[in-house]
Image 1 (cartoon, rainbow, N blue to C red):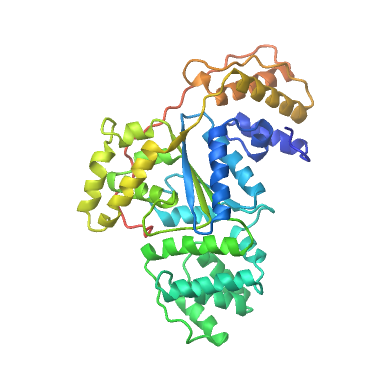
Image 2: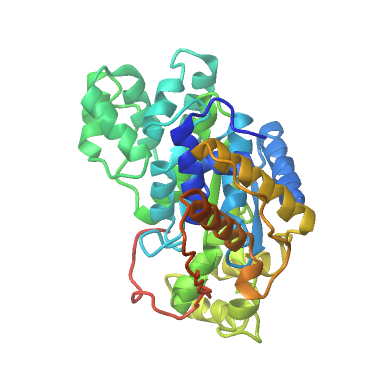
Length: 419
């Protein structure tokens, strides 16, 4: 299927993305995604999240380096956007460690995307809300009720009321940033309440960071649905970096896995759908009693010995079980898959450069990393470049395999306020 309505620059950018091994949306739409098990499961979760107001959930997918995990996540984002969900892609990294809910949430907000275009995510969401509608009335009532039950800080309904009623763009911007993950001065919200005559409606202090972040996540999912979208899809890439954390950080990351997958007891995020991608050997190398870290044996005990993290030991065990037993394994491409992909790539290259590339001779399989689709795609593009530019002496191309490492090189334990 060709990308409709895209000019030459967009098509060339798609080719360059594939050359660099990081397919963009245009490239994924052109080449398609041949992972029917993962796609079907994802569509089922989307439908359930849209139909059942109290359901949240997710799935984990696993595959070797270069087998198409990032390609799959890009494809799933496209599917979700076409079905009325908003999406955020988050790559786990040293700057965005998975054990820190606050940093993952902030990254998700910074990288959020709505079906109707790009722009600052929180601004687009707030702009989409009809502040006079019954949907907003229900959202506001929900925030009030949750605050009265002590489940949600009164700061949320208070800031919501100020945002709705006070024509103060600077304060509204501060409130948007607070909802999106930044701090806010409590005095600013209280000043806003005085100006709208609601200073006695709510009583609140600044909540603890550990309490604030799960509340902020819950509030944001409800705000997204109030804005008219069916839910929030968060796509988490490179979860295998958990293996490089210290033991307590890994324990916290496993607990976060349970939270994001909708398996944390006592927490629910209706309308939140999460997909996490991890390398296929992660569980055997890190969690299994036969692996490098033996986390199934050691992590729960270490958490229980630590006063700060004792209450998440059970949740961490749940996260480890999910990573061990419930990953959807990505299927290796067969000969028909390779042939179809290379033919789509050839059409894309022709449109990008106005030159007819010869059919690729790539076939399924190959020794080691040379069997990966990423290698076959990049090799074909490089070969066509040389032929198109009529290079007389074709140089040898040397490829070096990248093997992931789970060396423990994380920073010392510190309180990041991530919950």
